[in-house]
Image (tube, rainbow, N blue to C red; front, side):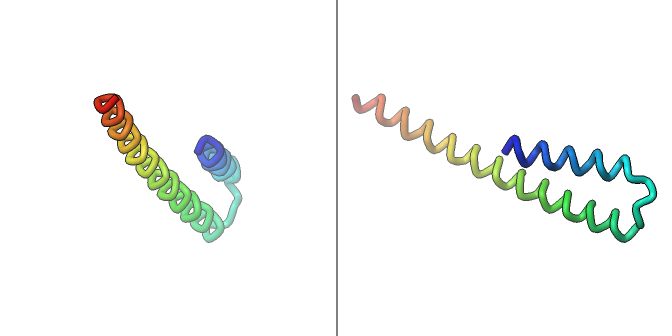
Length: 65
């Protein structure tokens, strides 16, 4: 996930630095950034759910043991 975040930030810097980029190209890049951010958010949410499930399982095992 850190790699995805770094890529998103690099793309944002590229977008900010390239002032003469055609409006159409900037819209395309912005759309791609938004899609990547949605993917990242989904992955983070899934990781949080899995982490919670793992904690529940670990707590259940410690109570049995």
